[in-house]
Image (cartoon, rainbow, N blue to C red; front, side):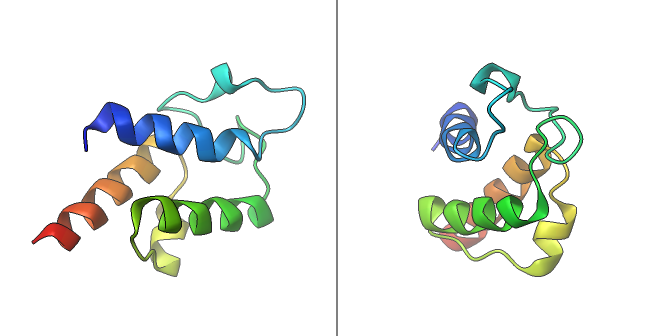
Length: 86
């Protein structure tokens, strides 16, 4: 699975939790979940659970703590998916 595909899957997960005043176009790799996308901590937990289901991976609390931006999430997803394949 390519990076572009991972981004589109993640974007589709995040868009469900965006406030009404933000469009899906606001989701770019550098977007900060809390500051720019206005994702609250409860919704961040929901995103983590959805990511686990979508990518068939297990995220730890430390992973969630490191997930500040969309790029952070993509890096964590890539590492977890790669580790699962090896």
